[in-house]
Length: 322
Ligand code: UDP
Image (tube, rainbow, N blue to C red; front, top):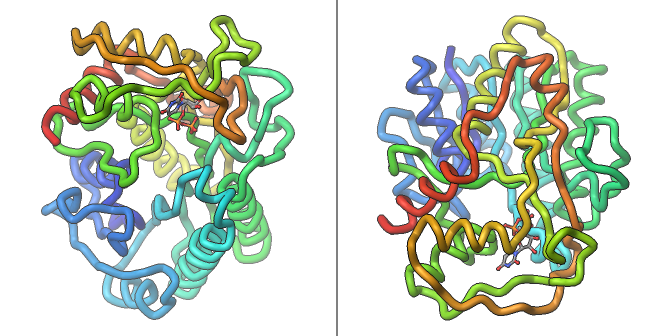
């Protein structure tokens, strides 16, 4: 089966491509390289450079290749930037997805796996967060993800397009063989920033807020190793092939770590001490996000295999290579 990986030159997409190839899928990558990176393009996949905002460019891929299913990773993903410039996010994430889905429908492809996000929930009332929890995104980025989930539900009802939406909690770590990893510019995520500080590339790591109602005052997040995240995509693909049904799953490890705990873990694994500064809260950050994995465990038989040590070790191996 040939899989189209949209955004396959990005952090998560590139690791999906590698793992799909390893599972004997043929892979076609579509990426505009705006946030993706040329050096993350897998040589064993066919690469089309194009932009989802240009319908003809994505449509052409389906004309040239017999695609069986699509994994859609392509999106702008910086929460803070989306608050400052929502138009950029609505045009790119929504219009781009609409063009992709149009091409999918015109070419009678009926299976799509969509990278959704825990940000659709906003500030949760209770944790762990179950799939049915109230959805109140606190950023335009989260709104785009929720809108696309809703579009996919309507497209299933009207056109029979089957989708699995995977709501990522905090994707982290790198390819365990050190070939693919995070290369964001600018980097905004906690673990790579802490490791860049350990490497001496930054003077200090800033803790955004120490007055949250959590055990140590800092935000708690559910970090999931990117390889576990991709194994969930492959399980989702098997599910679509077998069950021909749409589903939405929260995708996390059910374990929460505070910002301080992440910093301590990074100090321990790198063996390097570095400067930590306590600063103001970052706007829009919920205090505590932890996924319930009950549904995905039950329906896809998926569970995470890697812990925080694996995440930080793989991320550090990648960081040292950069
Ligand atoms: N964070 C921090 N300092 C940084 C970057 C992030 O304290 O330099 C915190 C952030 O406020 C959040 C957590 O680390 O509570 C994870 O942030 P990240 O941007 O990695 O992921 P998010 O949870 O926003 O998707």
